[in-house]
Image (tube, rainbow, N blue to C red):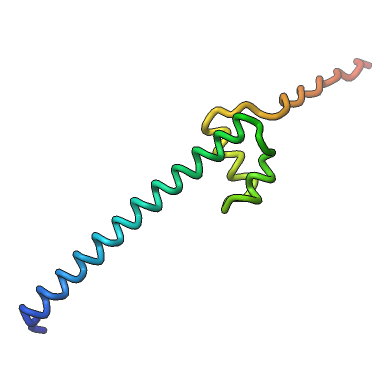
Length: 93
């Protein structure tokens, strides 16, 4: 069975705790920056300041993800959905 040096173990755990705290701090900063980016994207989609494709080009997201962000935030579509074509009944005969 492997024996652990108590001093080395305490040092290792203290270092891991310090690195974990730094990681969590950076994760919080990333989450805050992502939220700000999403808010900006939705704002400009709502105000129709730029089309989704150009917003995607200026952001780290593709056009489909920009659209998903807009839909989730309730941004109305640029165009009304196309009406479904009416099916025609074949003449009996």
